[in-house]
Amino acid sequence: MSGVGRLYRIQEFAELAGVTVRTLHHYDRIGLLKPRRNSAGYRLYAERDLERLEHIVALKFLGLPLKQIKTLLGKARFELSEALALQQRVLKQKRELLNRTIAAVEEAEEALRQGQRPQAAILRKIIEVIEMQSSSNWTEKYYSPIAREKIEARKQQWSPELQERATKEWTDLFRDIEASLDEDPAGEKAQRLADRWCNLVGQFTGGDAQISEGLNRLWADRENWPEEAKRQTAPYANQRIWEFIGRAMAARKAR
Amino acid sequence: MSGVGRLYRIQEFAELAGVTVRTLHHYDRIGLLKPRRNSAGYRLYAERDLERLEHIVALKFLGLPLKQIKTLLGKARFELSEALALQQRVLKQKRELLNRTIAAVEEAEEALRQGQRPQAAILRKIIEVIEMQSSSNWTEKYYSPIAREKIEARKQQWSPELQERATKEWTDLFRDIEASLDEDPAGEKAQRLADRWCNLVGQFTGGDAQISEGLNRLWADRENWPEEAKRQTAPYANQRIWEFIGRAMAARKAR
DNA sequence: GCTTGACTTTGACGTTACGTCAGAGTTGAA
DNA sequence: TTCAACTCTGACGTAACGTCAAAGTCAAGC
Image 1 (cartoon, rainbow over the protein chains, first blue to last red):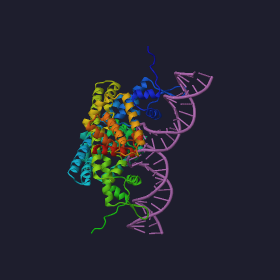
Image 2 (image 1 turned 60 degrees about the horizontal axis):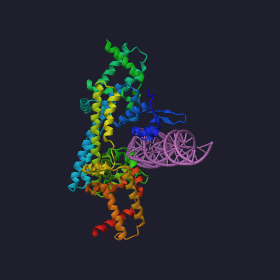
Image 3 (image 1 turned 90 degrees about the vertical axis):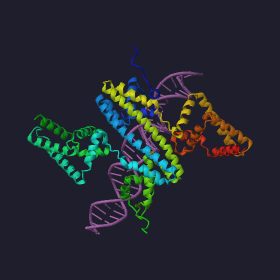
Image 4 (image 1 turned 180 degrees about the vertical axis):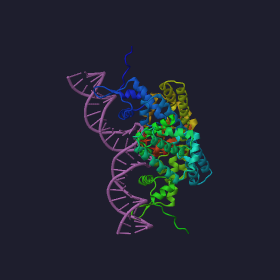
């Protein structure tokens, strides 16, 4: 028996793991990696902390924010593999953009060598790439490539008026559901609401299963959305409504 | 004659250029894009401002910091093309790292699918890539690939003791030069100092022209170094010393 | 037992490129 | 003249730490 394993003080531990002391301070403060303390308040890191820190470093390397890493490391391996798949898509998008950028700079340098004015040369080439679709939509990662194409296609037909009408219908539906939260999810009234729900979802997905699947992933990962998106969809985030609809849909299928 | 062209107020201009109003406020404050003002203090943007803003956006897209963009846009096209070539190397390094990362995640996912514990699977694969050489040395971009290889080779032979001795010799040399700043750069004493200088440079470059070239680029771009590096090399940044040595070397060649 | 240098703690401000209010003034059409 | 829409500046927030600074702790040597 070799006991419980060594304890490291912060500097030694930092060198061992290849991070800075300040980083460990930071992780401690945000609750990402909280070591034991001795009586004087010194941090004491154990082997298990090293393991966790290695996880953190690896996930950070993939570009995941610390906040998400924190929740991820508390959950099951399934969620981890989901997150990994998502991040993989993000990385691939980045790579595409990088490739186009590199190509653009190459063309710009070529043009420069041929003596063109830098404005014309650099700017035009690079701006082209930016406009192309650096759009870099944060929702894209939730959809499969096929689903993305389909969504692109449907976008063409979404006029601002349709958009506005859809927003209104959703808002109305949410209001109606909220007023009916005490009804029986399997009852007549709830089922009519569930029908309206399905209709509206269908309007966006076009009944397509792959778009639908992506949409589910999107909603399931709400906690990791950018702040702005969270605020804008806050009125639709009422937990009880989603539960109610969930039950109503279950009852619906059961019939 | 259509006059001097329209003037835009901030919101319209922002939409025109595809940036936010706040971004324009920011660029104004840091002196990157300063439009005219009307009597009430409203910003008035002209066509020329649009041109400059497009440059800014393009260079920012390549990952250049605003500070550097600011100095770059004040200089000649030559510097711009230099900077472009440098940034191109940075982009390519990023791409390499991205490719390895994507491959690692792929392997990790595969391992996960085969039911391995996430620790073993994800961690090991990804950490391997990180360690490989995510080192991501900020000086690398200044050297050609061939020069980098040669530097890597020479690194093997640079023991800590050699490092320390070199640092001391440089420090001594700088002290001696500083004490001789009033001498004639072509004189006996200055020439002996120039000899020592060449010797020390030779110790690092091994007399290699390509390494030498990269080293020149590195020093020339000092203003864009990370803060830390600037501080650490501050003692060697005495402008007058470099000018003195420059003149001494010129006199040396002339002989 | 005491000194001393290396190490540790928390606090607080700096960094980059803006986002997001808040309070107050300006513009221009009805 | 009114009023919505727009603009101004100032100031705090963000992510992930870096960089001091002041004060307490540890352990080795005297």
